[in-house]
Image (tube, rainbow, N blue to C red; front, side):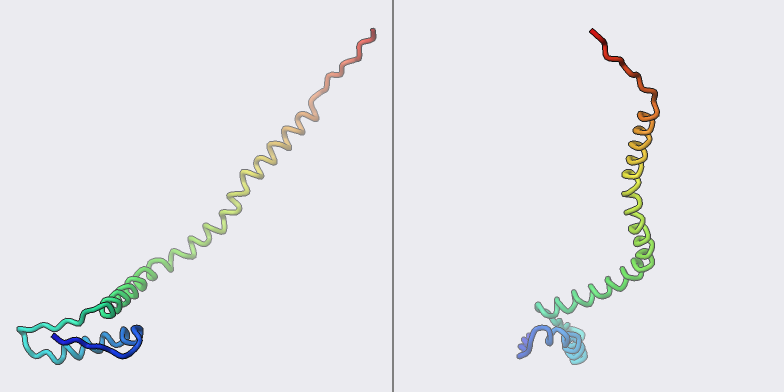
Length: 111
């Protein structure tokens, strides 16, 4: 077992994990022994690589859909305004009907 300690910032060491893995793997000539590079920084480097690969895959599918989605969202204010406009028309028509309806006038009774 070998333990490597680096006198550098974690972010800098994380960028060199692939180089360390390649060096350790290239130095291993035995089929009976398998070398592993482990630890927090190695796991972080692997997770970062996997996340970037997944992000590229998602972007391939999401980018063609995004313009359609944006066009739907620009229609939302119009859709939200339709009930308000319909209500305004309904009130106006009702008030017009009430105004045009013949009025019954009552005469004051004389006593």
